[in-house]
Length: 327
Ligand code: UDP
Image 1 (cartoon, rainbow, N blue to C red):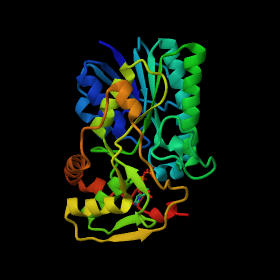
Image 2: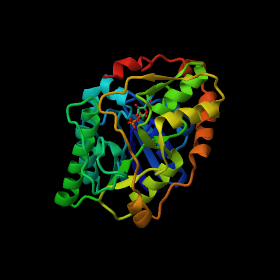
Image 3: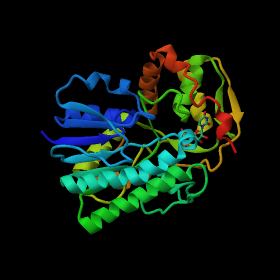
Image 4: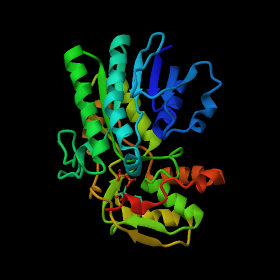
């Protein structure tokens, strides 16, 4: 049975990856410091003999007994307003955390896949974004703590590949959504659905003409699985190219949820990218991957999951003061 370490395992993507690798017959070691992760995302796996959980912050040295075949490094805050709240931890997990994971991979002769991001392209001047584009990032802006940590992560990962011959994979993840996102993490989909469920107006930042392209989590997990098992060491974009403005997105959520709340505008946060759409030619050619779940289907599944959440999560007061995030 191959053994895999998944960091950030109690988070949104990490927990879906645990499910997938358990289903594929792996022994899964799940690691998380639970700053933004939630053990409820892993509850259903706890009793399985091939699953174990380690409460640890990967920004400090990682010690793990026994052999290891693969590492997926997914530990990181992933919401812009989390970066503001915990900027130093965000920088540390992308840099020191990555260093510790790479060192562990080297010691165990394991293959490692690191979670990078479309944020390495910053506010992109090239559209759609190909892997060849170097990006347009403000290093000292509010998003710099995430973007630069992830850019450093890519550089460090490539250095381990070229210098040590380590087997490395780099995925650049575009906006992804699905069940188990934190309802109040501040990202746009849980924000809008949470507002609709609580009977609040939907807060569109700026005029809502900025675009994003949303990928359903199952499609992303399939892309990660294929990339890990491929032999391609360079960055690959995984995302759904179906681009939409944030205003249209708010209108879709209003229709989906049947809420009679309206759209209200709030100031656009600093350095908010004006457009984002993945060019997935590489994923198609190298991995034979493309997204299968339409936004209509994915949003319905996600809404059904969110509306069954207990009230304490629905009304939890984290990150509800959006003004703090504005210019
Ligand atoms: N956004 C919004 N209202 C919200 C939360 C986010 O209009 O309540 C916008 C945000 O300004 C951005 C887009 O939605 O343009 C996506 O934001 P998110 O934080 O989900 O992710 P990003 O792609 O910016 O990292």
